[in-house]
Figure 1 (cartoon, one colour):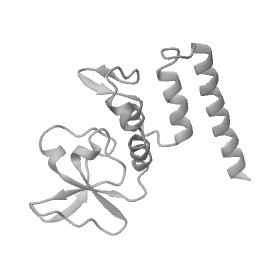
Figure 2 (cartoon, helix red, strand yellow):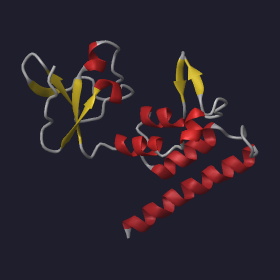
Figure 3 (cartoon, one colour):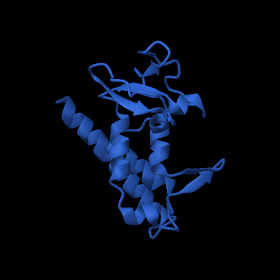
Length: 151
């Protein structure tokens, strides 16, 4: 199978790269016809099998990249930690705050920080009240930034 060239303004990804949620505006490569067609799975998870092997063209401005960038910034030490307090299993699938943020299309790093604080609230070296206060502080900063940006 040859690798297709995405249309201008799009970037090429494999189905396995976007399996958690197909972003709006995604195009699916139709190998039979040799062209891209609007994906019928917008907003949905891809199914195992053909969907994951397909090529997709997603808009270059797709916010999923922000979450991917956050994922890549995790240190190797955190990725290899055996007792990682951020990872849980849901239905046999390993989940962490990054996967949850991607599933809900949370791409704002300030909101993501608050989400992360709440998901592990009181389960690490801080008590619940401290984690909740830090999440509130993040969300207050988010509001402040929005007010600053609207001026």
